[in-house]
Image (tube, rainbow, N blue to C red; front, top):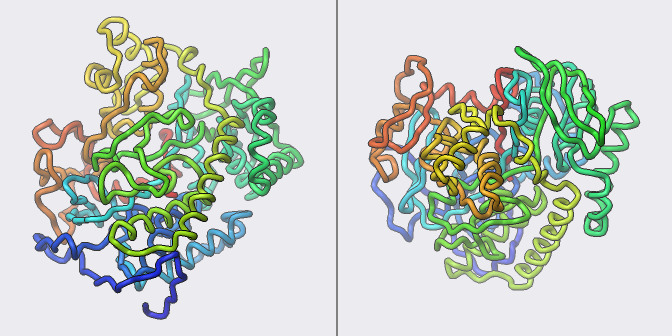
Amino acid sequence: MNGFVAPNFGVTTAAPGAPATLGTSTAPSRPTVQDLQPVIIGAGPAGIRAAQALVAAGLRPIVLDESLRAGGQIYRQPPAAPGYTRTPATLYGFEHRKATRLHRLMAQLAPSIDYEPGSLVWNLADGVLDVMRDGSSRQVPYRHLIIATGATDRVLPMPGWLTPGVYTLGGAQVALKYQGCAIGSRVVFMGTGPLLYLVAYQYAKAGAHVAAVLDTARFKDRLVALPGLLRAPVLLAKGLYYMAWLRRHGVTLHEGVRPLRVVGDTRVEAVEFQAGTQTMTVACDALGFGLGLRSETQLASLAGCRYAFNARDRAWLPTHDAAGRSSVAGVYLAGDGAGIAGADAAELSGERAALALLQDMGRQVDPRHVRSLDGKLLRWQRIRDALERAFPFPDDWAAGIEDDVMVCRCEEISAGTLRASVAGQGTQELNRLKALTRVGMGRCQGRMCGAAAAEVLAHACGVGPDQVGRLRPQPPVKPIPIHIVMMATPGTAAAATSSTPAAPATPIASTTLAPSAVPAVAVVASAADTAAHDAARAVVPAATESVEVHR
């Protein structure tokens, strides 16, 4: 294992797996099913721990990650560039030891895995992944697949949310971690969830001016959740510390607020909100905004996984058993992409999914270790229940949003347009709403607007969000260069691959291809645009952007 001694992960018998060489020809011959390496999508806490367990069993997994460096959003590493001197303790705070441990583990695993950073899995069909890297795409067949794609910010629109200077909480965090900069000189953070206070603390600790933290959750919500939060005393202590530290350093904290609007035309100038019976305004030039996290489930859907509505996450999620097995044989789910639970739970679920994979391959695993993992995961689910009670979803949002507020920024679809479809056309299902209004048909494929559109539709129909269905994703799940889509065959994975990048394309506006190519596909003009997107979203003040949280 090239000097790496893997710990025992409950595997009692293991045969060495044969390494494979990937993507070296434009039309590689497909190996037999028995020869295929297990594939892991995502190199956050879940993906790294899954890889570690498979390597310990003598296998050589392929690890595909969209980011350029492993760690996911929670332990995102800065660019590997000279002159970047921020220490792990500065970057990750209380979690710096966990972050350093995972980063070192990934470095130790490198000789024993096929790790491909900067790789976007944009399609999945019939046991084959379409993977874009360095401006070209190729196919990666699989027999066993662990999907650990993490989560992204959940955003509910409000008046002015598209004003330059508005960012998601994740976008604000990646600016600080990856770029080493703040999103503004006077920043307000608004929304709810543990990430709200963490990001505000990280900004203030780094020397940024945090004008206020505005939480939609109420103090009594935390009191109700306190018995459950006592199951995680360290987590609770950290949250209380962040809040106390912010107050001690002069940051104003408001609880139980209702966001009203972002003030400003060409740039954020202030945030207006309601606190009790008072309407208040806080001056700022940037806003970090988010209402918890939303699982990234597009690839699980393309894989054919069965879904069920999760009331706690207020979302449709792919179903899975306690070990992470999905409804599709050979497909396993781990981390926040299978349901929001946090980085610690993601590590456990990644290892558990890998052990399930090994069991399904006929390998023996230690049942005591499996039971231990299952018990720890169950404990984290109970903690997650308590966190949801402490930071509840503002389920009255859809009732108060004005008709002229833009819900889908890609296609410029307002809340009033969605309501008009219900009133005039009797629309009661989300994909029907998409077909009639184009909501969710743009560049983000509903990743940003889907949750809000479902809430507006459900309220207009007088039902819960579980009654209006979920958006069915179409490939590509994220924007890709147009030349790659032009090589795709309708209804299948890409028919052609290339081992060399295509010539740079002339910059053009985003293009939507006709259904004869790939249905409802928004693409970008060049590979450079896609590669730069993750970094640019944190520094370009033109619009709100979301950040993938790979856990």
